[in-house]
Length: 221
Image (tube, rainbow, N blue to C red; front, side, top):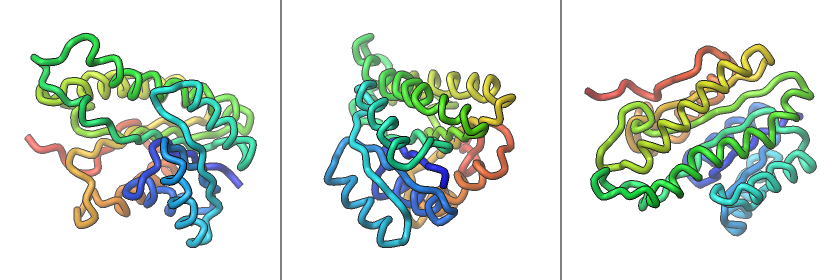
């Protein structure tokens, strides 16, 4: 059984995506800061018949991320699908004129160093089995900078550049890297951006392996 590892497990999109990939036959490794949170999510997934395990880690602490992904591979097998979709902190979203150089340290650690750490941890296993998928989920500021959310705009743009370079570099190795842009808020009632709909899109992107950037819905002008 292949392993789906989710960075930024939560009760919304994270849980919906874990359910969808679990129902498709993948074991699930959930990674989040809160051990209690992970226990609740793994209990819910186990109740749905999904093999799920939780591994505490903080995306701003690279050593903890590496340790969590290594533990996941030991418990459930090499990670063949990695989804990086933690929710940015509110303090990343200062207006650009109020943003200092120091204010960018955490957003860049969150959206650049975190993904690089995760990919470095799972790439050897993907290469060993000869296949893999890496999924990045970002908001609209990844492609359209928002002056009121400077930290995430700068960091998401850097994450997008990294992901695009990975897409090009790893395609010859049968490792597909893709990005899903979610322009609006993720809400249960949203037609295109509900957790369940987005989870279906992510599974579809994994299966079709077609192109790098995808949009949950058209970007508003």
